[in-house]
Length: 93
Image (cartoon, rainbow, N blue to C red; front, side):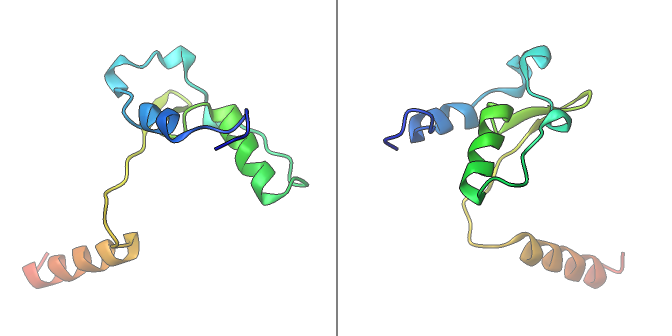
């Protein structure tokens, strides 16, 4: 990305690879403290969220540390939940 306040792909990859066990909990942004102006455009809201959260893959929610990761697949959460429920029903659970 060309703009100075946008994250590059290298930055995002580095953030994604941050080890949760090595994170300083006091240095992580708390998502409960994020405030976004509703009057901003969708793009500006996203930029403001990233600016405040610092690392969208690793942050706090109160006293808990949250690490996000995504599988490289076309399956949606709905697909996976449907498979899980069907498996549970077939297993008699």
